[in-house]
Each structure stands twice: as C-alpha cells, then as structure tokens.
Length: 215
Ligand code: DX5
Ligand code: ZN
Image (cartoon, rainbow, N blue to C red; front, side):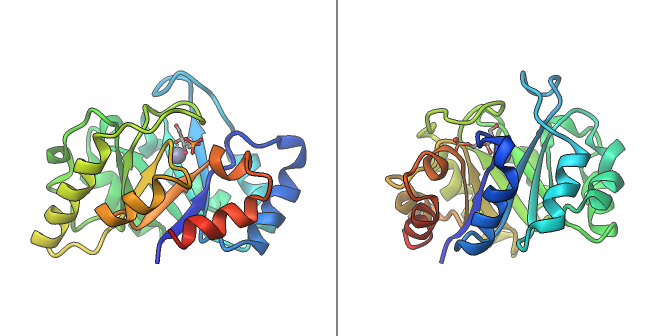
C-alpha cells in the first residue's frame, strides 16, 4: 500500500496546529516539510523554530525535504529540530556520499532527491546508502504546479536500478500528485507520494488522503 506524505507548504500557517492535528488523525504516514533557502530554489519557506513546534504535536514521522545549498552544514540542527527523514538534493551536494553517511550517523533516515532534469546516473553510486529516493515531478520551489509526465518513465527505470542493486530504498514522488495520477504512479513503482495542493484544496483533506492511500 502507498505511503502518503502530505506537504503543508501551501496551508494556512495561522492554523498550523489544527493542520497537524488533522494529519495526526488522518491516514497520512509522514508529514512532508519543504525547506527552501531562496538560493537553491527561488522561494523561501520556514526553518528550525517551525519544525520544532510541529515536532511537539506531530505523531507522525517528519519527512524533511531540504531545498537548500550546502545542506551538510545544517544536518545536526535538523536532527535537533525533530527531522526523522532528511532528504538532500544530489545537485546541492558536492560530497553526496559523505553527506548521506552523516545523516545516518546522526540517527535519521537518509534520502536523496533529483530535480526533473537530473539523470538517475547521478545517484547510481549511492543506491545502497539511502533509505529513500525522491524524484521531483515538478521543478522545486512552489506548490500547486503541474505534474511532469516524463517522471513515469524515470520511476520505472529507477525501480529496475534498485532491483539490480538489491537496494531497499523507497521511491518517493513529489510535485503535482493528485487523486487522478496516484494510481498510475503506484503502478510505475512509486511507494511514497508527497501531496500538497490536491489534499489541502479538497473539501475533506482526510478523505483525500484516504483515497490517495488506496489508489
Ligand atoms: C515543491 C515541494 C513540494 C510541494 C508539493 O518544491 O517540494 O513538496 O509542496 O505540492 P503539490 O502537491 O501542490 O505539487
Ligand atoms: Zn517537497
């Protein structure tokens, strides 16, 4: 069954507590937090104090997606703030293998993420050093964008690569995921879906999560 990781990026932050409580009660598996620095991506979101506050009330693992340059400088700070899974962009890491090892040594699960244009070859030497591989299905920076269809082929290729290398890393997809394409993504090999807009613009977000989970 699919794991669902709702992204709170486009929710009303004056009601963040209620949003997290709703996710606690829902079938969401993880809570996806998008950290942007205005350098790696053309947008800035939130940082440590907000993650700490979420950690205090969240009863689900925090899946933290770093869209920042030099993520290696902040690994410990994200651990202390409450990250359970920490995912770094391959494009932002000069010493990707070292950074992934450092994440695991801190006791977090390690994830690596690729932008839509980045080839899978970029991560072929770290397939056994990660718990999670996140494929961006939009260009990172904003919620509510349109799913890039080439992602489907990339998922299928990645699934084969993981099998050939006996890697147990989970395949996660982020960007433009909705109630219509979730089933297709699962069939292609996706195991975790990040979903922002299509959950939070739904009249009943908990119901949308349930539908996605059973896609
Ligand atoms: C985009 C973020 C996504 C985004 C997903 O840079 O990484 O997690 O919030 O939102 P939707 O589902 O609206 O595309
Ligand atoms: Zn994300």
